[in-house]
Length: 293
Image (cartoon, rainbow, N blue to C red):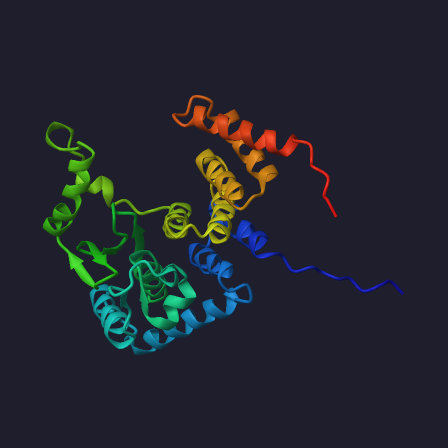
């Protein structure tokens, strides 16, 4: 009789890597939930998905079988923003918990991207076509309706007119010199965001929070996910190396900086990073002084 088989559960990073490996089967909601495992290693993503499904089922039961898309949209907005009470966390916008979808599900407070993910999932489960929009400075939701598109701000629940969107976009365009004859059309900024881009934006929000707080262990955890998500984004490998360096892990830092410089030898920061790499290598290869007892 053979010995019983033992299967080792994947680590949080292995689970995340499996979720984001293939664009064709990329589950943006599940990947967003998985990000929160950095803060809560015992989190069960399937339990969180079940909670979201239960919210959607409550809404579905209220919809008439022949409900028109506009009726569904009105009921969804009333349910999500008024009854469930989801809203932007205006009192503590940069609270890291706003980026963890399970926390947002329970607190009913979040930032545009996490609110958009939850709203978009409920919309999809009642038969509406919704997509996230990586609008400059503020993530939005786009809904395809029979008479055109509706652009919604998930932070406030407000439907945005073309004039509203133009007004929000102008500072971004001016900052980048995209005005006058170089002005970019509004439609360019209202494209549906691919799932990989959505998770990258979510992680980069966390990256800025942790970098601002000099929280190197949490920053490193985010960088590990970004490198998995965007394997050709060499600047993320560089930033992982810098996080390793800040934590005193010279060998890992040197490996990442070498990889970055090999792929980006002409980058603006290549000279500075080469000096940093040489200093790291010097410390790694320096003879160790004997301890005195």
